[in-house]
Length: 164
Image (cartoon, rainbow, N blue to C red; front, side, top):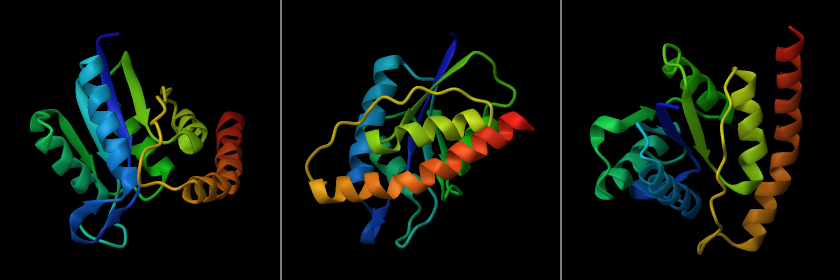
């Protein structure tokens, strides 16, 4: 494989351009993974939520402070959902072949992420971001429970894509 891209999926921002604990954890893990594998591009995906700037811009700032070359950063500031990120990556990679995709997200979100990428014809690996400080057990449980209906919806989308 000649190229590899790391895609960090958004997870909310706080007032003043501060990342949520989940977004900070994903971003830091994704930057470390990007360096570890010698990635060719770091795709930061997340639109504008309740607090400006976009999640992608919050991640970009963190990546630049960590020393990531700005020429290797790709911003997706339009994604509101996981499937939006997958579509963006598919479009961005349209002319590229033989690219390994590493999608950085939390364990509760990994299966849906892989389904979203398969729906648009891509395969990705989802290294698990370890839980850290700032994310309570209650918040992790709530995120996991919230994931269940979305997972069913994405599985149905994948099935529809396969049947068409």
